[in-house]
Image (cartoon, rainbow, N blue to C red; front, side):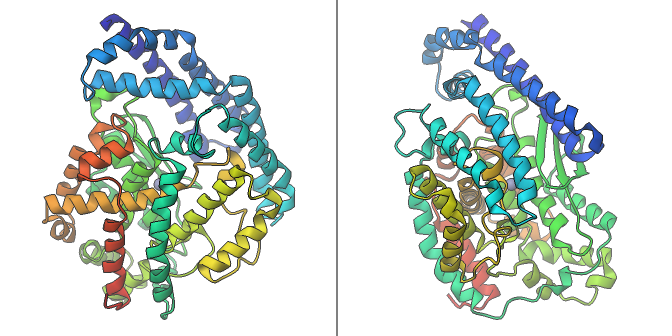
Length: 503
Ligand code: ZN
């Protein structure tokens, strides 16, 4: 049995090596590759991902998994071996359910759709991309049928990024959150908006990059196992537990972009760098779900990085880095500027309070499209109506409406958005539990030290990688299932004080 287990482990290591190599090609394409390399690079990445997929869905893997069932049953659920078998089996079953011919068809369709979207969005031309999106929805509904027995047609998609969650559960949590959020949003936005002009000045790129990376290191980002480079759309990527990279972009006329996206990607990287080194190359060596991953980027970016305590320590340093721009701006004004709440059109630029309403709109539309209750041709109008209802404004065009996010245009429809809001909720829940265990965390943050918080997160969350599912790790780390209470308490306290809401 042990020999068979080793054989499976070796196979998974090879699968991992090939996909890491593909990941490195993608990182290079997004950072340093000259434009002329694009065509060949696309082909090279496709070849590698096909090879790694083939190596994984090989019937030999299924045979090994079958033969190892008695071994798995003899092991303790919490053992690393049982966990590795459990996770491998789950991934294998998922990967083998979708026929490779169907997958190839979808991949070629979505890459075409993505290409059309890159032109349709700037041209504000929904009609151009509409036939592609209709076909994508067809494919999505077909793909769901490879997972018979689902409760909701969106469940197979939700499970692929947030395993353990279902449409019914996400809808329930979102409805509860929505009820609490909508009144908070209207109270805040009925007041005079914060003045954030101090962030919209000229800030030289090199100084922005230095400052952001300095904070990342102090958070605990290990530069022996990481690096930062410039890109168009920031992301975190990992080639091994010894090489977890972040990317960023700067806008020289806006301080907020590089700074907060660096702290965001650092949060993702801290999670990956915190995974137990002996999981290297196994299916356990990665974050457990989209929602839990996002909980860490949001925790470090927002709960820490946009807090008063954090800036009490760092603002004097930021002023020293940009004396002309910020020398005469008081801490309070800066703090208000980075936490400005407003009804805005673009999800990725939205503040902490309104952000989730953007996510809920997309999540609800995904369910309705998959259910066949919302036709693609009605989507732009549905978007405007819902936006008017939720935000009190109507997007002036589709470019900043239904065309704004890449998700539906480069992959199947479903499961693409819920992780962002689950992440906001979970980030607050993990943070609240850490504070109960270590009440000194806020005063440490005020002194620019993050060890206690980082250690708590490593001990209770990061080290496990994918060993436990999201619901399992939330229960283990916080002692209760997912709850919106800590998140709402966090928002009410922070924004109550910022906007004198007097609770
Ligand atoms: Zn993220």
